[in-house]
Image (cartoon, rainbow, N blue to C red):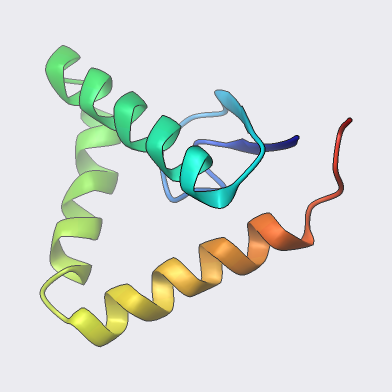
Length: 79
């Protein structure tokens, strides 16, 4: 199991997510983002706007995603 924060995943807060795979981590982050969007959290909305802008370039989004995966892979297992 690895731990990453919302900020480490491109978000706006220090909430920690725990997951065994990067795909699980991404899903937890996505759900948190949806929750923060529903609450109208300004800091998270600003970060989401940055990601939306990044998504306009598939290559840039691919590179960003690869960078986050690499950060996940570099973390120690917390088992």
